[in-house]
Length: 334
Picture 1 (tube, rainbow, N blue to C red):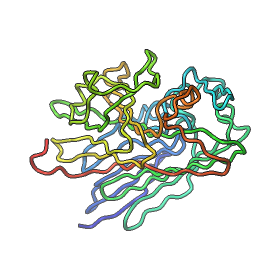
Picture 2: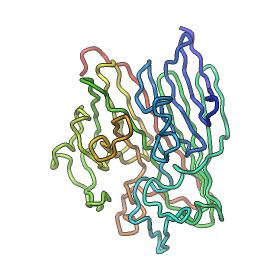
Picture 3: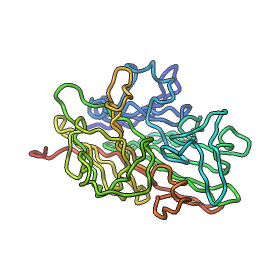
């Protein structure tokens, strides 16, 4: 079977599609928008759309909330948009607006460093920098850079990160990926298996208290066996400790396995479809991979030693990644 990899720019748009073709037909593909936070969307495998896509949702492309965000340097929420690190209080304000969730990379332009396709993969690599005097520095006063490489192979999308502390002081940070998945329509189901024994107790405003609870103590939280996503009602941080998370599309005959490097300690399950976040024209949910729990800097400062917060020395680097891998389902598995 003839196989070809492409990096294809969409005409009239700032979007690059990474594609694996077989016999001239798209086998696996994903869209990337470097100018809008290096967000991805439009993941498709064997003709099945797993994520919101163009042109059907083109009207939403300009919305900051559209697409799969890179969460850096503060994955998900920060209480009141303020954190304290080693006694230093930082108000995360960007363009005069408090940044209370998702960090700073997701709504900033990135610089493309490399774009290529060869016989084995398609690759797109870009960089986000925080420098003294730019609009992000007030919100996070450490000079640093984040490089992300997206590598599309025949049956997988790998997302590799490299963080460099370019400052003179130790830098706290975490990183996460926030993908949206379409909830199948009609009678089709998608099931989730998430190998976590514990989850974080949450405040009414959805911030972790730092206390862990057994998943067996709360209905709808034990996801160690495949569970219908449509039956869930969650916006919850689970401790997956670097283990694989799986979405099963039984009617389509495959699993989507989310594998991470050991630094990704937590997974967030967010069922947006029943949490007041109906997107225009589609119902979606998120399975997010994070190196730390939500609001990790504040929790660490408050005494939680194992929040997952990483601290880079001046000049230090850290790398890791997430792989979204499609596996054909063996007969009899449901």
